[in-house]
Structure formats: structure tokens, C-alpha cells
Length: 127
Figure (tube, rainbow, N blue to C red):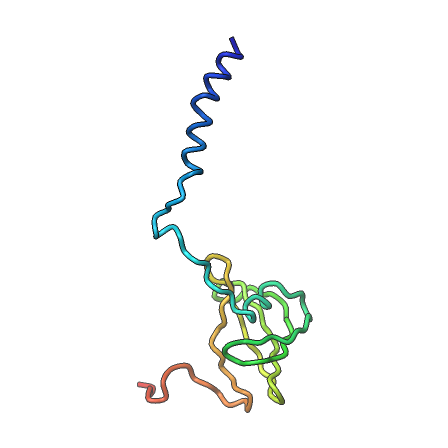
């Protein structure tokens, strides 16, 4: 009796499984290329504390990076500070963990000469 029930179950289950896995055409919305991960963001996500590496970044060029600690910001986000050296210039970058687990750069507030850099266009003025 159990053998007959097992055969009957396999008769209906196996064709159902094979029909789902053999469908080569997926709707275009489901087929998306993964977003390329920026090397600096990858370093921020995976490096051990005090790890150092030379990274070629599309925004900063070839830089030396030292990883800081992970911390929980006042805004309720996981962040990480990176110490960056570019030639004779050293500055800090902060990366935050975005939705989905990716890491993105927080806008830079200080440049190499320690002058304050205000994000936005130079034409903007305070009210």
C-alpha cells in the first residue's frame, strides 16, 4: 500500500518539479545584472580592523586605505571609518551600511587641506 502511494506521489511531484526548473525564459524584470561593487566599499565591508591595502577607486584613484572599527551611528546605521592616504594627503571617509547590506560612502566633509567642503553646488547660499 505504501509502495503504491509513494509511486503515485512521485508520478505527480517529479513532473511538477521538472516543469519549473526547465523553463529557460524568465520575465525581464527578474533578470537583472548585479550592481558592480565599488572596491572601496568592498574593503569597508570586509576588511579586519587596522587592515591596510592599496585600492584603485574610480573616484579617488589609487589610494592607501586603513580600516577602522564598525560603529552604530546616532542615525541608527552601522558605519565604518576608513583612513585614506592619497599621495601626501590623508583624510577620513565614512561608509554606511545601506538597505540590502551594501555599503555606500557618506559625503566627505573635509578635504586634504582641512578646509570644510559643503556638499551641493557652489551657487547655493544659506537663507
